[in-house]
Amino acid sequence: MFFPNSSYGGYYSTKYTSNFTDGDYDMIYHMRMAEVYLIFAEANARANNMVKPEALEALNTIRQGRGNFDW
Image 1 (cartoon, rainbow, N blue to C red):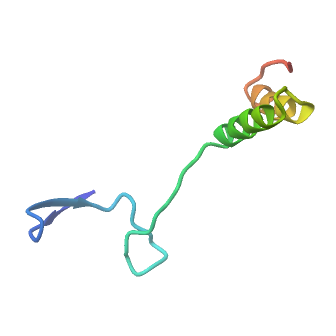
Image 2: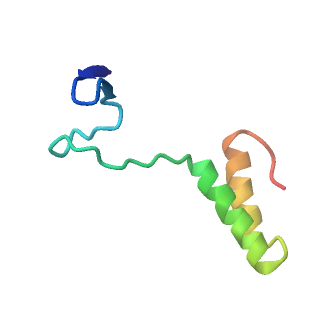
């Protein structure tokens, strides 16, 4: 929702406000779990200069969740 904000001469949004605090704009981060698995798999492969079973397990977790076969 947008509300008029005369002090800035425009509007402000309530999209990122928290209902659990006094209404200040708290930083809220959203990340898909699949992205976390991909970051882990890439970091693991780069750190070891090879694809280890832990990295493949992370990728297979994503693939299985979408109905695909393991690598």
